[in-house]
Length: 306
Image 1 (cartoon, rainbow, N blue to C red):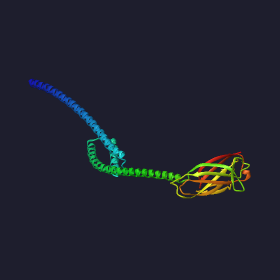
Image 2 (cartoon, rainbow, N blue to C red):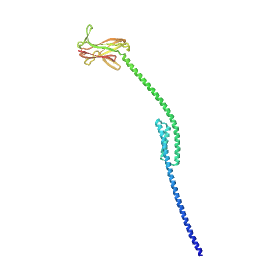
Image 3 (cartoon, helix red, strand yellow):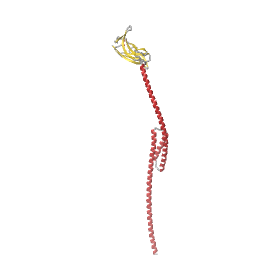
């Protein structure tokens, strides 16, 4: 009986020892499992961080690609001053998508959707730019034609202006040439005798009239015919002497002392005009004489009386 009890006690000690060993093994296993789980969790966290960083980089790349894509539209529209509705709408869609990308939280699904949208936008750009290129070529062709037409019009206008100027110059030359050319213009005071004899005098107190004489030169340009000539005689007191008649022509009016008509036949002709005067108008000093053909002054002369 005592032997049996000793054996049972020995067996109990052995069981306790085995349980302790098993417990230690379990603890070791649990520690290993916890360590493995921690390591696995760390790896998963690092992978998650790496994936998130990759998604952010892809998002930035997509934003940059969209910005470049929008820039191509900006350049085309600005360089060629285009206002094409489809081009403007396409650029607007790209701008809206760019705003969406910049504010979105990236994920694989979102990145994939943006990639597909960019591919579609690039295909659309290829089509729209091809059409825009054709439009630009047509516009440039039309612009070239318009510029060429404008050059022709400007050249024609310049030629017309040049011809008009030449005609005006020719008209002035002809007008000037058609005027009577006066040479040897002279004037003096005269005494008219009862016999009709005319005697020159230098004294104002003895003079009866003023006589102006001149020669009309030959002129093949001037049209033959009767010409009206007018003379002004202004005394030292700055008074017009003579008939003091008026002539209105071309909206202008001037006074003259005497007039005459000559039958000009393109040949040289001598002419004298007598100007009557009141005694009080004939004073000593300097006299000015202006000769006119109609309202055009032909020549001017002076004389002095004592």
